[in-house]
Image (cartoon, rainbow, N blue to C red; front, side):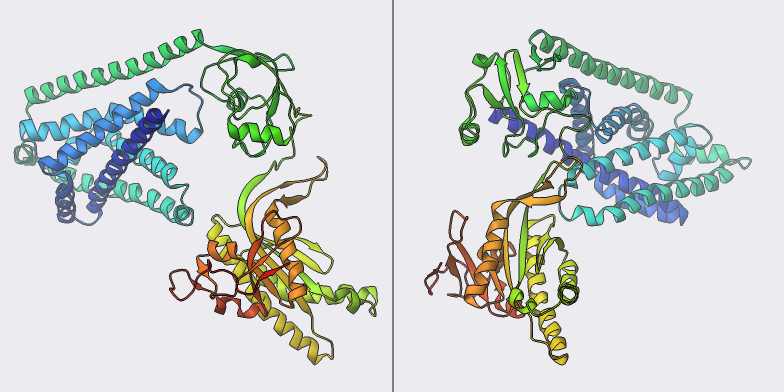
Amino acid sequence: MTHVLWRGDFVQRSRTVSGVFLLLYAFLHFLNIAAGLISPEVMYQVQEFRRLLTGHPPGQILLFSALLVHIGLALWQVASRRTLRMSLAQGLQLILGLVIPLQLIQHLVFTSYASNIHGLDDDMTSIILLMWNSPEVWQQYLLLLVVWVHGCIGLHMWLRITSWWRPLLPYMIGLATLVPTLALAGLLTEGRRIWAIFSRPGNAPVIRDSFNWPDNTGFARLFEIYNLSFWIFLILLGSAVATFYLRRIIRKRNSLQIRYENGTQITIEHGLTLLEISQLNGIPHTSLCGGKGRCTTCRIEVTKGLEGLPPPSPAEARTLKAIKARENVRLACQIRPSTSLSIQRVYQPKGRRQVHSAQGVEKTIAVLFLDIRGFTARSAGLLPYDIVFLLNRFFDAIVPEITKAGGTVDKYMGDGLLALFEMDEPEHSAQAGIAAACNIGVALARFNRLLASEGEDPVHIGMGLHTGTVVLGEIGTTENAPRTLIGSAVNAASRLEAKTKDLGVELLISELVIQAAGLSAPLGMMQDFTLRGVDHPVRALPVAQAATLEGMLTPQTDPEVTTFAPATSGRAT
């Protein structure tokens, strides 16, 4: 298995490196053509710059090696695929990757080969003129456009998992559109200019000689080489397709059957998990965690063929033990059948939807609980409308601070609220939670000054800020399932908020939030808290006034502070 993973990683890296190099070459090629919008001299200067990359033997070896590696991997991908099912982007990229060599062969033969063997002047002006009065000029532009689109798709699929790519995506799409557009304009401008000169009486022979164009015999030889190369590639492509179908026939001979409780029977290949088998064949199969083994909603009862399954892994065994599952119950996302099975899904799909539309998303986020202190006693002498009026004024004062930091109020609970900070990265979520807590403290002080001017008593609050992995999804009936979240981090944040009342502080922020944000608290100010319903003590920083929080925290690189110092004030319970 390690060897297979290493080989897959090597193939992916080779495809990425060669693809990025070829995309860079296509980008410079487009810029070279686009320079025709300015002048032939600028076009020549850009081409000379491009030749710094590929105009010498090492650069040419690197370019052609990248080209051969990329084409070879495309053929290998066809031959080694298990199925032709793929996403639209993957399918488009594969098709473009196979179409490109068919046109690229002609381009290489009539430019690079002709230049090296027959001495053809391969300046951009010469190449454009050579193709101008024929459909070849549009074929070669479309070839470059296909290479560009293929490379842009590959670049996006490579970088889409990074946090910095998404904000840049609109600008990169604009750049990806602008570059070939400018190249087309440059092509038309330079083509019309040089053709107007070439078509003047007496100019054609002189220009042919100056560009050292091959004679009819030379062109015939170039076409022979092109046809030979074209058929070699078609034979290689046909071999890859034949290999794919041959492997498919062999796998079918070694295939096995999965029979579901409703009578559905499918023939599958070795190597896939049962959950993947269901998904690939369009069979509804609940899996709230997405097949990561972190829930049990995909579990099945094996009614036939259990003896052919390997025993559960330690992780699967612990999960099954936790739910007191019978011996014939397994997790579909963890088993890879090697013999035929008859199974029954524990969670049956009902109607059109198997479960609620939002099954659940697992995220590591910061969670903030906030509550008004002593509000029950304060509201005892108020009319119901006055209570609602006060609460709305309070929430109007503090909730904007949550939303400005990037958070959302998940729910209001009388005189309190639960806020979530759903960011792409746990670090950003923690930073947003800290900013919101500090700004709430500032907004509260401002609100209390307003109350004092009206002769009202100030409002006191308590907040608990914690971070952890939670599941966000719909809880309730199919017709009425509001979005909520579940996880130990929610309970811990709630218990921290309750502790602020005993300590007389506005905020308790857990050490996990501080660390996730890349910050540290002053030495000796952290305390350990044993919280009801939380398995382990939670280390947190008491903050008397939330507005002072950011001033208490420093980057972790500061040698004067640490978040790992033992608490000096004892354990609070």
